[in-house]
Image (tube, rainbow, N blue to C red):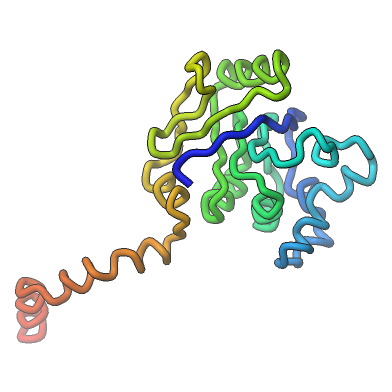
Length: 199
């Protein structure tokens, strides 16, 4: 997954917290069905026309969010439920810090942009609800294909690489096993260990 494209899902209210994303009574459900049942459950009950219930956004994978998205508790199920629903990235001015970490740990991209850039994405959606945004992990860029809207992704390159290749920290370490083995078997390491044992 080095690049993907999608039209936007607008969720522009500020301070959408993890309790709204997944109410606490669903937070113990780790299975996909349970996560999807919990995802914005109360919002969907209150509003039959809630954005994620609309057929027009089905299949979309990028949420254009309001500021401080994912604030509140440290509930990892909020990130897991969004990913289980097919969401792959969120664009917002800011995120709850623990939510941001949970997203990165679970292969979801929380892309923070400046207020000006966020306004540009909002204007793009207003002009055309079906406008397609492309996220290129190799280039570290988010924008539209004609180049009229293109901005760097301010996420560490190491994190982008892990998400692009579907790794978590353990997966990354396992990928490095051949190099680790070569290092451990090198004469320099054996000599260092021998000296420490002697002293």
